[in-house]
Amino acid sequence: MDFTVEEVIGNLGLQALDDGVWERAMAAAGGAEPCGVVSAYRLLTPEASHDWRAVEAEELWTVYMGAALEVELATEAGVRLETLTAGSGRWLTVPEGGWIRTRAIGGWCLAGRIGPVQGVGLS
Image (cartoon, rainbow, N blue to C red):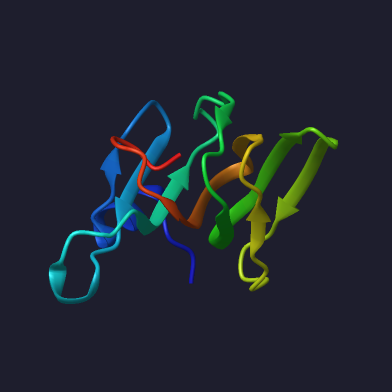
């Protein structure tokens, strides 16, 4: 079954961050505040900005539905480009100490991220 961006945003209760980016952090057990690490849904559209950001602690990324997610990593070892496809079950580990930027390829993408709490917006 195909879903529209609006249906995914509404059904998951995602909140707008920047142009083309929507997100919702998952509550810890019992509704407690997360202890420095959070799991989140992140919906990216082709209009989303693709700014680099520092990776302060290891992160895990996957794609649940929609278009593929391109993850670009820059570390001391060089720059690496990875593509995650929806439903593959593949998780990508993003190492601490580098830089990352993400973008949806060919449409909207619902991704999952596990990593440190980073204030407003998780990545």
